[in-house]
Amino acid sequence: MAAELVCFEERCRARFPITEVIYNCPRCGGLLEADYTDRRADPDALKRLWRERRMSNAPLDQSGVWRYREVLTFLDTFDRVVSLREGNTPLLDAPRAASYAGLDRLVFKHQGFNPTGSFKDNGMTCGTAQALRLGMQRVACVSTGNTSASMAAYASAAGLQPVIFIPHGNISYGKLAQALEYGAKTFQVEANFDQILALVRTLAEKLGIYLLNSINPFRIEGQKTIMVEMMDQRDWNPPDWIVLPGGNLGNTSAFGKALREMVELKLIPRSPRLAVVQATGSAPFYNLVQAADRSKLDKVERPETLATAIRIGDPVSWPKALHEVVSSGGAVEKVTEQEIADAKAQIGLCGIGCEPASAATLAGIRKLRAAGVIAAEADVVAVLTGNLLKDPDYIYKYHTGQLTAPNGDKLQSTFGNRPVVVPNDPAQIARLLA
Image 1 (cartoon, rainbow, N blue to C red):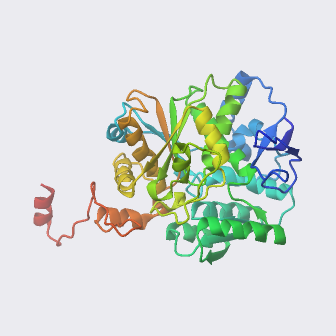
Image 2: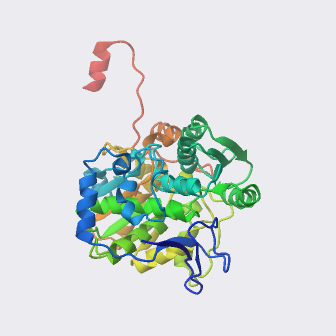
Image 3: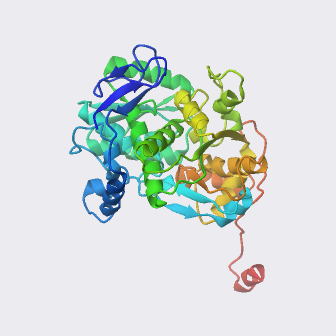
């Protein structure tokens, strides 16, 4: 399939070569996406091929992204792809979480099983491949944590220099540690995410650095394979709902694009509905969907949430995300810090750990179920975006009653599991256990 970059804005739809280093449409400023001009394929043959590759030891086939390379034909060849065996993430049944949400059944697609512990790896392997194809030497991103960890790993593996910009004091040490360990040049800027992104876009253009935030259309291409892999795992039977947290809204854009392409290729008979969940203190997309005028997103100047991965007040991918949610008949919800913290503890009781932003999905499902938007018998897949150990301080503080919201309010340890200090006395410990 031949590939081009195309403007996402319906009024424009300008097209550009796939090798042009642009992130927005030069004509109208709209977002760009990779478009494949000839999408004809035999769906049954593709399904057989992708299933056979699961048994292959070839590096590309062992990747849960590049295994599906027939939907990633923006590259002329795949010989410079850098893979860390990304993807291959499980579907996990979670009956206790289902009961908490009011569902008959709930399944989690857990992206925390990726090499650097988040869904970002699916997109970063593609973004890095495009950087190499363009002959870039340095790559950069603005990040609250997961993007920086992933970009640092893939850039270093590819022999590129990773340069990371993070909000000073607004990143989990679990995530910052990864970026440092993977060799990234790291700048802690005294500004919020949205302000830093504007700064870095200026620097990238001046210094010839390739930008790998979610505004990069090739990141979106990699992230769309999360949906392809999920459908493969479900034997191409789409669920009723796919629920995911909303920060910069790259995943929402990627998932919707993947579902549209799979319907077009006749890989699935219909598209699921997308539900996006934001934190109350960082909910510009929720506000947009509730507004009478959806033509302009009003950014949140000072976004606040302990779920740092979704602490974004001016999401660049909102036009794409709005299209995907509306066209799928989906929904957008917002949840409080307390709702996120309690939902996270319930996910943990299923034996499944996740970072705080991931738990917004379960909190949102519970609210959507209570409102009658999602039926009890609905087939629901919720995406957990990051690993449990991305933010261990949050977990300890919740279970010991020390977690406070950004406004200083103390959160209740509703499902707390406080450790107990005991003497070196078998009889007394036995009494406590009894």
